[in-house]
Image 1 (cartoon, rainbow, N blue to C red):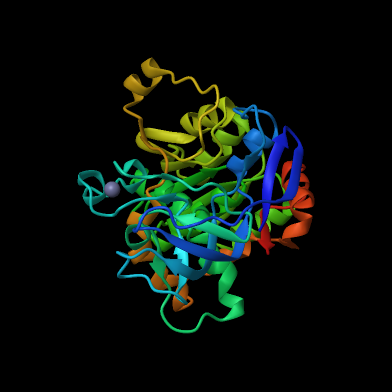
Image 2: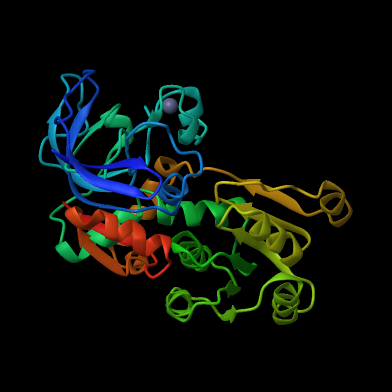
Length: 338
Ligand SMILES: [Zn+2]
């Protein structure tokens, strides 16, 4: 099969690799219908936490089940499925608690910006989409493998409920998803912090009531002014840099919560400030599987259309262009079709 391989920082290639095979009788082999490039794929692409040998890459995909192991019973050949970006058995003590991202039998795929993926624990991991899947629905379903549930996790972690005031730090696909997720949960006022016109537009289409283009203390001041002078009840930190976390704590009100879902890189917390303002930090890697039963129906009935985060679609043989445009921020998020 053709598969995306990161050879060294900046060197993405589509290579010919052996087709994956069933290994355990709980596995499925899924033929990828669509995959995409994640902001977190850009870290190794840029040489941060990169491995020393060529590695298959990608973790977000939807597809059609091609083969199943002998004990797989809930998923069948021909099913159109959403693959959460981590696999999980959905039965262990941690899955039962809703922390599928820490499943005792869980882990990550060998990559998915390719044609075929081996999915361990197929019954626990894959979520079947009922009925015929319309072509136009594919981008929206694909967001459910990572980016939209991750934005949702930021909002849930920050305690967003009906009427909450919310600020979103980060205007990548996760930040934009967080805007949509906060509105879906009933947020009263949502302020998106973004300096980029096309991203501001998506944020507004997802329900952002205000856009603040300035950053730092000044940007936080503008958010506070919009939100009655005290800052946001919930700040959704969707980047993971030292600057974005600082921005989040400058913007949250005393007693409020920062929900963070950006993979932290060199982030330092100021505990004395958190102590004296009673501000909270909650979040982490999204347990995507835990949220899909709730989120999928809203996508299928058109209540939300999270696929608007994709502004570039490329055939898999142009995957290197997809990485480049996301790295240079000329694309918000790139969808790949094998
Ligand atoms: Zn588990």
